[in-house]
Amino acid sequence: MEDINIALATDNNYAIGCGVVIHSVFKNLDKKTNAVIHILYTDLNSDNKARIECIARQIGGKLRWHYLGNDISDIFDFETPRWYSKETFFRLLLPKILPEINSFNF
Image (tube, rainbow, N blue to C red; front, side):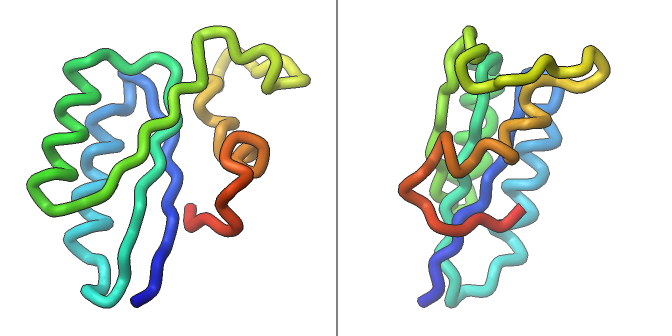
């Protein structure tokens, strides 16, 4: 069996889209592949988190939550442009955030 890691970053504005991606991944994943979806977030309310967990549970998906805290200024050494959310840049920081994982699928 092949194991893959998939990273998603979301906030409350994109929680529905995150759920759609998770549903699609697990519905279309080869049965010989085990996937773990890592969700990086700073601002995700309990209702949205519960909805995402429900989607994964219904289709047997594995989720790992990674809360990065409200003050992530120590992670970024640049100022994010106002038209991007900070979550946009999380995937660029995966080696720093999740050093124990060697490879990700975006």
